[in-house]
Length: 266
Ligand SMILES: C[S@@+](CC[C@H](N)C(=O)[O-])C[C@H]1O[C@@H](n2cnc3c(N)ncnc32)[C@H](O)[C@@H]1O
Image (cartoon, rainbow, N blue to C red; front, side, top):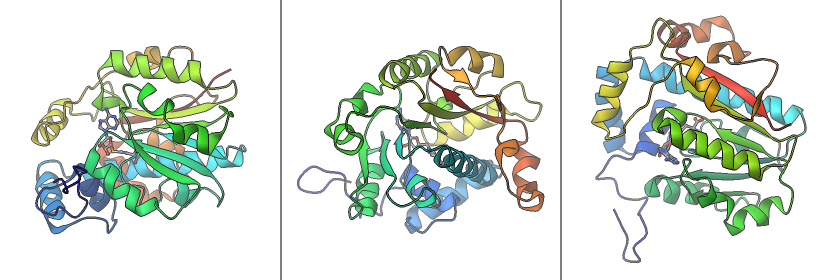
């Protein structure tokens, strides 16, 4: 897993990597045979996973387009996964500055290879539960300067963190950002009829990732001082300008389970 210098190796094809499995589920080509085997095994247990990951990525794309339309040119993203398959810099106009981050060293190493020739994009290691680990890095100053009116991505991560860590992170980001900044976030809604929290937890136990499923009410409480924008907290599929046919499978299994919102610092 590590090269002689001690850095994680992206060429290690003997152990599945969460980031590359996710890339495979999204239909990307930054994955190895070992990842594809692991992904297929996971899909046997939780077949709807395929639609969930796509729904999350579609929400990301739709939100990025809205934020770019609203004039945002700087994005700070947590728990990014690999920057492939319609991720921020692939959706936003050229010139948009993006600081991606993820906790997984193999994902970070692979991602850095992918963006290494893009001067306006960088990818760093950081913990979404402890945003200070990213905010203090030189790259933030280098790409954003002193401008802190930014769009912050907190997508597809809240359910991997206990409540107190999400609350802490949102507080820190609120204090750091300038007024007018936005933050987009999604979560699993335990009160939606089709949620099967136990199966989800079982699935993630296999990849040794604890999962925290909460109600929409609790999710709303955790947003703290961030103001929910007028669209409100809505099921992810309601955010998407995608034709109904291509959404059928995703909403069949995930309808109402996944909720998202764009928040604003006022
Ligand atoms: C669902 S995927 C990423 C989704 C991506 N943000 C998107 O919108 O499509 C979750 C990612 O979270 C990362 N992750 C898990 N725990 C984390 C943490 N505490 N801090 C940062 N990243 C984390 C994993 O390594 C994985 O790449």
